[in-house]
Amino acid sequence: MGRAKAKAFLYELAALAGSGEKLFIGNFVSTGDFYEAKKHPIYAPTAPAKGPYEACISGFFESFSIQVQQQWPEWKEPVAFFFDQNDDPKWRHDILEAFAASKKKDPRMATLDFVDSKVSPNFPVQAADMLCYRFRQIAEGFLDPDALPDPSHLDYLLIRPILLRATTEYTQGMVDESLSVLPLRYGNFPWRKKV
Image 1 (cartoon, rainbow, N blue to C red):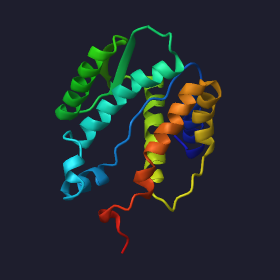
Image 2: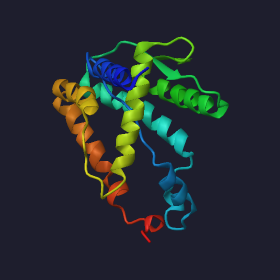
Image 3: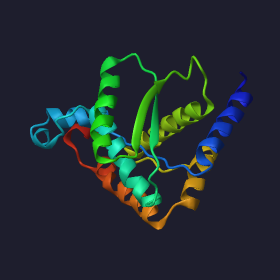
Image 4: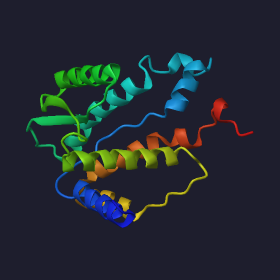
């Protein structure tokens, strides 16, 4: 696939991901900061007992309940979750365990399955994969206090439609979440000292 075709396909995926009645629900853990905090005498006592990936996936499922309530408070329909296939049994176990714990609290969480988008390409799964990758890039850029936000055409296709149809409560939740991670951007952590 040529560069122009690949870019067109990327924009097509972004338009699909950003369109319709969808919510973007995710979570982010800075693994570098997580491991450094675990080693540091001041921060270690308050660091989560779970590893960064377990903490991230648990946070993801917790966000589902909160954000669905903010955007669609009357919605009671069951939800199926799909994750891309992975060969790591611990990763798979952590997802299933976090899902089972969250399902006890929210009956809308119906099923979870793992799909291999490389074997049987599924356009929505590919769009979701692209979305996760882009939001990870945005989150990692957010950690650098010297980096300025620089939304791309891809971001415009992904994010703007969600914001235009968001409820006030959902928008406020997004703002609150953004503010809650500001310490990761501007925190004066000992392991981040510039030389």
